[in-house]
Length: 329
Ligand SMILES: Cc1cc2nc3c(=O)[nH]c(=O)nc-3n(C[C@H](O)[C@H](O)[C@H](O)COP(=O)(O)OP(=O)(O)OC[C@H]3O[C@@H](n4cnc5c(N)ncnc54)[C@H](O)[C@@H]3O)c2cc1C
Image (cartoon, rainbow, N blue to C red; front, side, top):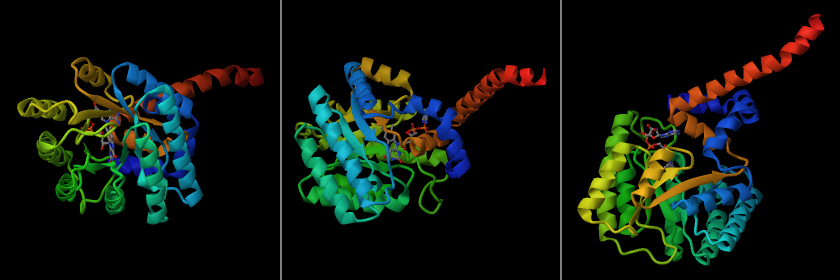
């Protein structure tokens, strides 16, 4: 299902149709807005509501160094504004937006500059994990930055068979790990095809991650906690809470993370119960690939989209009706 939705979404005519109309309506549920001002307003509102925030300037797979530099400049500007409004939001960045596929050296240089700027807020940066063709390059980037003394967080996906090994590698280096299930359509040669297996892998990795967090030192100012539990799955959240309580894990060693607009009820529950929650808040005009992944994750979102399409066609018919009638008369 996920693969089908993602490949349909790549069809040019479907893309053109969705970016023009109902897709935009749905995107507003998951994306803070097209502009930096809207991203910052969302960050401020979340911060005031008791949530931590991570801002993602949407964009991926740039095709020129100039585009990678432009993306980096937007992130730099974002940091300046965050400093001004005193919201210590972290940044989530995609290596392919920094041109990792064009030149590893340039991507490393640009990210290094951004990390140095973030250290002055101070706040942290985390590398998102994209599809499995980019896992090695992403971990390379994370490792190079680390060796330069520029610590960034990384993301690992429970769906991939390789993840237990990657988790041990990042743990051995004392890194900060966001554990998610994985949003990309992957072949069965690299990832569990069955959701039940992904869920079981998530539980195992989560236990290991929280044990690691319990033994890790507290993060420094603006530092990322060792463990970030990125899921909206109530069963995973309950497992995490059980282990957090058993371990007596201090709140600076972990945080829950959820996506903007997803399971806001659970987000509010966690905040009200006093658990640290960070909301991943994307903004920017290039929202289509992000929206495609949110659609593929959850069939109910497709129904929402269909309802929007139907509503739109009824409105169109109603608004064109009188004209057609007038012509007939
Ligand atoms: C903060 C954060 C950062 C992430 N970063 C990455 C990353 O770098 N790389 C990556 O591959 N993936 C990333 N993901 C996505 C992740 O891999 C999953 O695809 C996504 O979170 C859905 O999995 P789940 O754990 O919520 O569980 P699921 O079992 O898929 O969902 C559990 C419940 O959550 C709700 N839900 C889940 N998704 C949606 C949705 N799209 N719309 C509405 N409701 C939904 C539903 O109620 C569902 O029943 C991130 C997720 C989060 C929360």
